[in-house]
Length: 353
Ligand code: PHE
Image 1 (tube, rainbow, N blue to C red):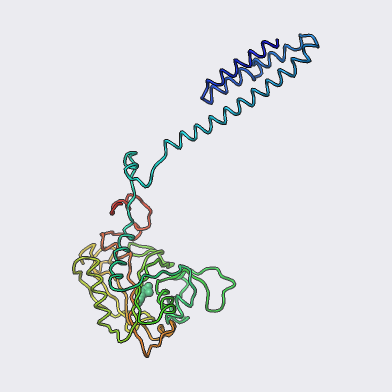
Image 2 (spheres, rainbow, N blue to C red):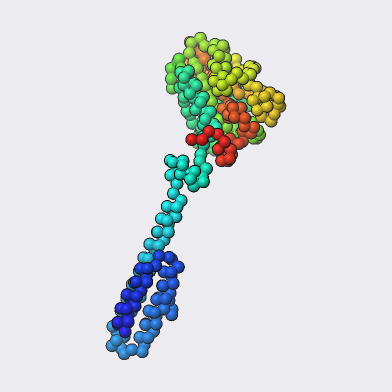
């Protein structure tokens, strides 16, 4: 009997050693440890042997049983790990090596058209001596409205336009909101530097509005400001025209209209002829043939004061380029909502890495 047991042990170990599939190991388990398995047979047969033998054989058989159990569990664990490793090896992609993606038939990424345009605009402004600033998306009423000469009863403060944040502890006049324009950075920029200076600030703005082909609740603008001595409207117009020429690489038709923004005086709307329909009228330009692209104007004296600048000594201009619209015009995109659809079929149409 004892011999039979040690033979069984050897037999089990050799069989187990040769297996590497989970199903085979489970079969082996039931062959030895199952109800009708080899060990159970031995344990059952103990009742027929004399008590002396039973006393030595019993514990031995049980020891072997728990030994087998441990060996099987270890084996199953190691199979699990090697299966996982195998899978990981198969699905490994070196994302720094685009050929690896191509080889696997996978599609590789491209820059979002916004990124392409933003980089281009930043380069143009940097070459004209502008700094590039950033600012927070969550602002308060002071930066978004008050400091920009937008009094408490201005329609832009209407609940429908602004995403207000629940803010029970906010101080009077400092309620938090998602910035409705990047003009907040005019104030931050002025407070942090001394004139003369010029900067741009590309960024996202948020408005609680219905969306359509040319409106999104989350959209991008590019703010710009130049403050110094004796800056004139013709300086403003010169900069705006130069920028548009650089961006579109051709002369685009522009028109200047008076525009009202509480933070500039005088204020203008600079429109360009719609490049989607070439001025014929479409859903992007609302059938007018023109797209509002560059609201701008001379900085209001109250705004300079909010930024800690003496309006008697300095003046300047500011603009808020509708950068998503610019992207649309440049690439002929007919619906602003494509821009953040996250649809790879859209994104992959632009320059790739
Ligand atoms: N902040 C204005 C808007 O979002 C645009 C603007 C910026 C107008 C700077 C004039 C000067 O509509």
